[in-house]
Amino acid sequence: MATSTPQWPPASPAVHQFLTAALSHRGPAALPYADDARWTIHHHLAALSHAFPSLRLDAGSFTHNDGRAAFLLRAEGPLPLAAASSAVAGIHVTMWLLEAYPCAPPAVFLTFPPGTAVKRRHPLVDPCGAVSVPYLREWLFPYHNLVDLAGSLARLFSQDPPFAASPRDLTADVAKKALLDLEDMQQSTALETESLLATQTLLRQRREELRRGSRELEAELELLEQQLQMVRMNTDVLASWRPPSARPEVKNIDEVLVAADPQSRRALECTAADMAADDVMYALDEALREGRVAIADYLKSVRAAAREQFFHRAMAMNSAV
Image (cartoon, rainbow, N blue to C red; front, side, top):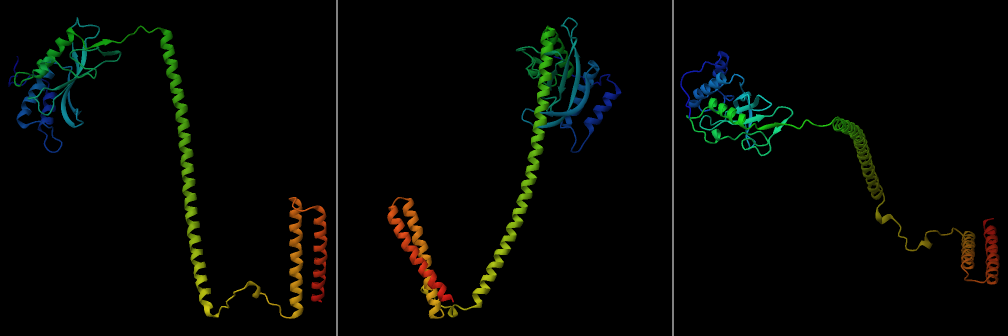
């Protein structure tokens, strides 16, 4: 196993400047590495940049499996493979230096180029691109470092590339059909979106109308309550205007209207008899319609009621003169 040496690797001044600035920063935005590990981190990343210039060093936000986010250093870029590997000459790798580095190994992920996909059941890479190789599983500081890790990845993936070219033998008809289906889907989605937007606009208008109607009903209710209060107040005023002791007690409705003289009393009685005759003839009409009286009896009773009504009307007219 290789060990890291204390000498600085001949990396570019820009790399040393970046690492010095990043690892010396203090305060709330400081990188979450132990103070006694910062020199080792600087040395490992500088050596990696020298050995593999295609890997770019920077810092970014890393999300752990539990959802916790941390701002960490990383090396990212294409990692060259052996010439005899396959159709591609390299893989895009990202090495994240976790908070416990160098005591804990980095987290390594692969990014697959367009037109490729991870091999089914690859022993070293899961479908999400996370890498698990023996060098990472056996990580032990200070015997392991980033340079040897990158070399191990290059050798392993040269022997068994983690990705394969996607099938490219689609016929022109299939490709054309897929394109047409996509256009139809886009058009359908656009129409559905327009319909939803129109519905949303209509719902907003109706919401405003309901709000306006609600405000009008509230104003009308308030006005009615004010009028009710006014009516109650007037009722109380009228009730207090005449005391209950001054109100005459009426026990019989017939005592409400009293004739002023005998002539008026006779006219009132004749008018009542006239109206009673009307009621009798109405009752006879209903009985004839329902078949409860014979026609001869009906005519006889109507003539009698008519004669009596004529008599009472004449008496009422004479009383009024």
